[in-house]
Length: 74
Image (tube, rainbow, N blue to C red; front, side):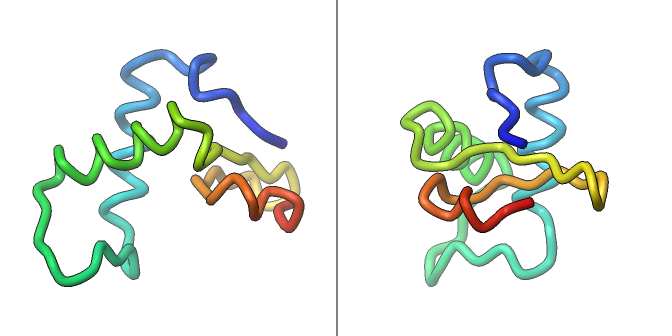
């Protein structure tokens, strides 16, 4: 299910964004970015609709994925 980022409490959204950008395997390319810069990049992607927050009831996990991949998420 898609979770609207606007529906989350600001602190919850911030924690989710920080957890997402610090996961192993999150690649931002050649350039190094600070934690705050990474969080802001993902926040802007959510605001633009380029990314969405999804929650899987089956796995009880939350993730942030590109909006065009939503149909592949359970």
